[in-house]
Image (cartoon, rainbow, N blue to C red; front, side, top):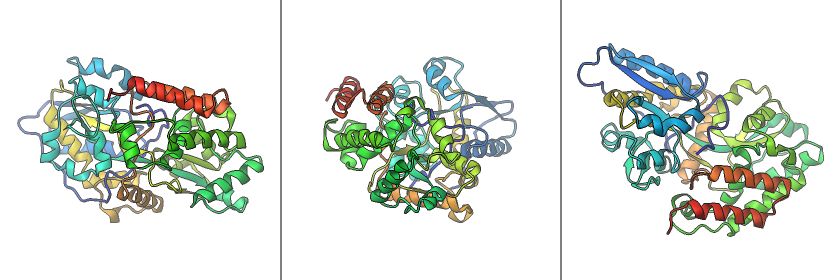
Length: 431
């Protein structure tokens, strides 16, 4: 899935379970480790919640494994996406790497036999106990590379979910109620548009536009709808009530000026910066922006879950995977354990992320507490609905191009849904 990486330089985290849990660090590598090197690939920015937490984990790991050095090999997300199958099938595979979750990514690598089966380690070290059902979905893949069942091929130590970010100062300026209900949200957007302010920050060239539309569909959907679409547990009809409502409402919002037609070529970064600069009062996007907004936004801002919907986009975070050809697998398992330890998870929580295994009292930042509370709400109602581009290979590009057409008016909602149906049916497993 390209959705959650074609986004921002600072990536934040969200909770990995329905509640904060206490854990302890795992054991050390067995046997002699003198002179060994743990080769680690990841693509987190140094100032992100994960980047800072994992740098601390490296220090702890080396202290607990005398003679072992961690060699971080910084890779770009796109670079890993394109080269992973080739590298992992060679003798140059790293010992541990961060990799994208979902059928089209980690699922494909597991199907190709390029990843180590972590089932025994997940059970022995208690990783399976720390993940809620919604988050655990992306850790497990069957023999066809479909997520949700089978063996463990990855372990996330964070999760992510989407929310409405809004500029409280602009809402006050225009005497608007904060968007706690869907009527509040649409009334605010209508007022902003009539005042000449485009209310929704959007990135039509990347993931943001399609995520607005998917969230609209989710507001009329339920868990069985999601399972049919994402996990192939039923027939997906793009002309059903949920998809039809989403396409028609999105097109209507463009006509009303809630979304700018000019944003078809806008990237996710541009949308985020537009919100940071106070130019657009509302952004619907993921928790990966949270830490960055905490450090860069100068006005008063708040968040709320999408009003009127039990479901929202989100999942477990990107995965720690151990390549099949890794030379130091026991060391890799130990490093994963450390990133799940209370010390590192507390750090994640206080750097703009919400951890799986922190001490709740150790999270002191008020906005981080809000992030935790909202995710707990989503988790408790089994509300993580994954991402729209996950089901089939290449669907991300289809969603980008077709949603752009819907924005410009060159495609009507009915034709838009026809195009999605055709691409989905072509790529989904035959039932």
